Structures are given as C-alpha cells and as structure tokens.
Image (cartoon, rainbow, N blue to C red; front, side, top):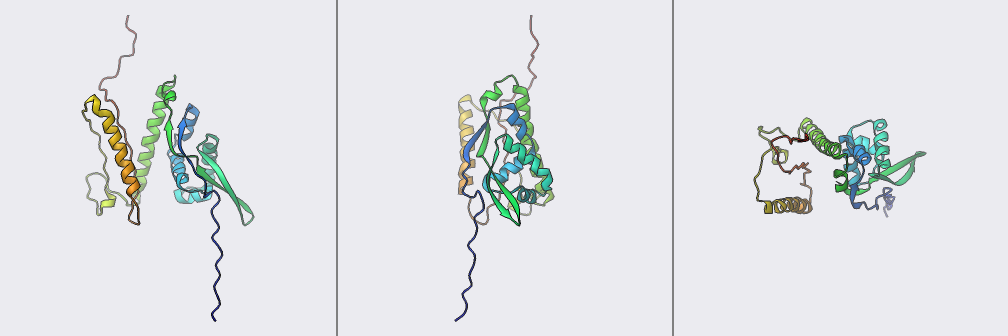
Length: 218
C-alpha cells in the first residue's frame, strides 16, 4: 500500500474571528486629525477585511515597514485600529491588527462646534487627497485610462465629472436614499472571480455661488 501523505492542519491567523463594529463615530478634532492622511486611510481599509501585521500591510501598500509602524501606532492610539492577536514566528512576536469598525462617520456635534471650518477642511481634504492617490496609483498600474481616452476593457473605465443638478426640495432625501441604496445593493450582489473593486467618492451639497458676507452690518 502507498504511504498516506499527512498534511498539517492550517493554523488560523490570529484575530481571524474578530468582528469589527458596524460604525465608529469621530467625536473629536484630534481623532479627525489622526485619520486625515491618505496612507492611514489605506491602512484602515486593508484592516477592515482581515487581520494583518505591519510588515504585511507594508507589503500590500509597497511601503517600508519602518514608516508604517508610526502610522499604525497613531491609529491605534486614536481608536481606529486594535491589536487582535499575536503569534511567535522564528522567535519574533508578530502583532496582528484589525480596524475597529466597518465604516467611519464624523459625528454632527463636531461640525457644530467652534472648529467647524477646520473640521470641514480636514474632512474634505482627506477624502479628495485619498481619491487622488487612489486614481494615480491605478493609472500608473495601467488599470484605468483618463477621461477622454478609450479603455480597452470595461473594467478600466473611469467616470469623473462635476455638474449641478436642480432638484425639488422634497426630492433631495429621495436622491440621497436611492444613491446609497444602489451602492449597497450592487456591492452586496457582486460575487465571484470576475469582481472588480472600484473606488467611489461622492460630494452632494447645496451649491452657493457667492461668498457670504460675514462682516457686521450697522
């Protein structure tokens, strides 16, 4: 009889059973500043789906680990990521981290505080700086074509536009709800080997042409 080949059982990754909370609300300007960096957003996005060590994060982001230890430490101190497990490998303790929540939202109280403009500036710059970094990386990797160029496959298509839309007041919440429902519905339906990950940045806001006159009137 032929010898039976024995395989060692797969060792689960430390923290693989960790379940992030659904939502984390940013309630302080310090938290907002801690996350206002495209690289830190990338780290959080990676840790939302799986537990990783700093070295594994560095490999995925093509960054030196020495640079990321500081960023992960700052995110941990601010409450965005947490240590979920350790493992000793070749005499070295490997630390595995996960994102604390599946999504992050700025609490309205922060936007009603005395630092409203600073908070808004940080939010907007973080979102758009992250978007620019994402698009630049994808373009360098040959995964998309700038607007106006013909993409050789549908998965390389990109849509960037700025426009104004006129809505009845009663239709504003309907528009927002439908847009959010569409994103959620299609993201949940997308399964299989042919799934392509797309970035999506949305800014839907009341449009004002003139700068408001903030001077005191006698």
